[in-house]
Length: 311
Image 1 (spheres, rainbow, N blue to C red):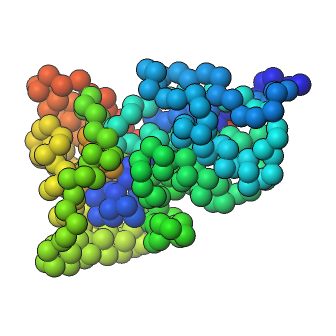
Image 2: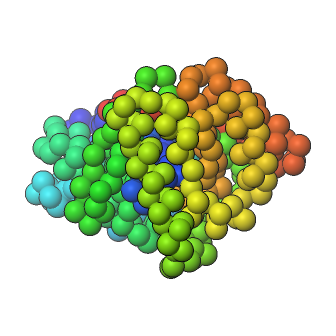
Image 3: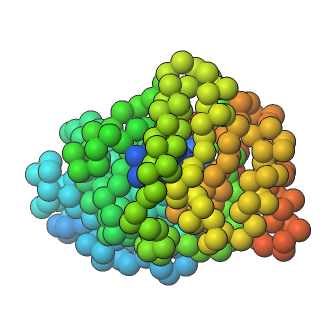
């Protein structure tokens, strides 16, 4: 039996993207997760190796995000009786706000589909990746899973039916993300959010999202810069992220179009008109957290157009 197997890479993603809580997200070029799958003689799916997880991930496929996504994909294509080994190589941090569980789930679903010669499309894999990601996040929100799978900037119009749409991308748009090495779990970050929104804030945020979408369709970076503002979620979650407002001010001072929290945090993202500004934003971010003596990692990336790929 062929033992070489196939390898899939699924990228990190920025969820919420400031103006679209649970509805807007985009993929990065790096970091991401890699999964290797291969056939074996013994029936069933077995996770045989996990690296980069510091012992935090279960080997039981039904309790593992990648494992669940893979199992649901196998059920869909009618191949549950086949023997498969899976290796999971975590190349991104947990609880970082960069869609770590989403990337694993996406890679798990896609790896199975590739092993069986693309029985379904990437878009058709979304429900299975969502089921995998759900066991980690506790919610059913596609603003990380869909960009990681499909690439680009994704608008989720309806989470239950996975009605997702890729937005036109503006050439040259770059993201800078800093991950301060403190952990914030999505479940915890959701628990502090209020269930009620003042009418004035709802109107303002709705207008910000509308202005952002118009800017994307027109290719108007000035509109993007004007409306990349979160007046609802960011003020509630900023307290969880050390030096958030200092980092945001530093990014804006060197030319970022906008800056906010990536997903549930603690990562902070900024969008820039080009790679030079994005690099300057990265240096500004570093200065803040170096002065604060907080370990950190910075990623500078264009928007990833491809999403998950066969390596």
